[in-house]
Image (cartoon, rainbow, N blue to C red):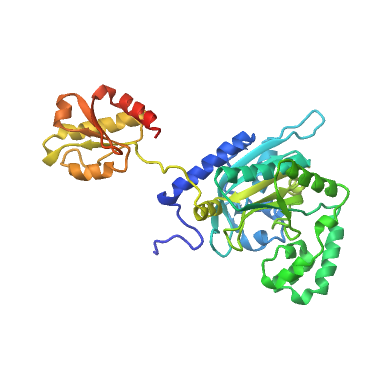
Length: 437
């Protein structure tokens, strides 16, 4: 057996996992400030949820889903994205609630976790990747669109990201999109020979996806294509104008991009991305938009919604590239050391075990030498070398035991104080608070 993870997946090791914890803490705090409640979703769902919700002609459904038949002869799929699952959960558990007139109230929800897509691994993109999602369900107005854009940018601001830009478009709705689709097909048909093979296949099935093509051969063609925001209906046009006006009121700058259609069929009206200039061609750190018809496409009632998703892998990568702070890496505040040369004082080893446990029960992060209590452990020098990574060393030897005290050493300035055993935890708490650790 090749003891190696499959291609496209990776382990998040301790050198990186603490950074992820920092990002998720900031995300959770910001979500709470904006009034969003956390939901934990299942990793797999019925395949139909994604084929109907995401769209049968999307790359995700056609090429990228991890789908299998379970032992109950049911087709299930590892979730490739979170929005369809979030809407399913809201409908199943009535998270939006209903009024006396049968209308849904709104719900602000967020989640995070692994997603799965079979695609070519590249920088910041994996076959098992991690996202955090925010969704505002039940509110059809542009206020929700503006808030989701503001929420996403505020998360990145708190994380210390720079060189970010809001990119905006409208993809219309079932009323105005058919006419635009015909206009687009006519335009692309006139330049069909310049399109890549994939886009020629998309032309009749889903011509909007041609706009999203990253192939260089399609770039000049799509750049000159008609803009959908110039073909919006009487409902979508004022909605888009109010989104832009709302962003201006909040002092956001944005750039219109007629090629921004996102990769999923459920989007209606607003589509947006937050991009960073530090990721090359794969520069989106966040993307989202409105999906007013997603609920109906999966068999539910009309439930408008808007949301976004951001990849944790990408966010951490951009933070590293820009030198953003991840805070202080968690470490033990105190390392408990046994002064027990040649095993002459086994009581010191026993006391180390007891004090380490006591400190932890007092909420003080503590570590100890893991030598076998029945045998001499590592030397005092070796233990102090390990203690150098902590803020304090708590030293216990024959003299300390005889005096019913412990020696507590500040590993930053070298000061050492003898403290009665029963006061050790209290002394450490005061010291930690005073030092602001």
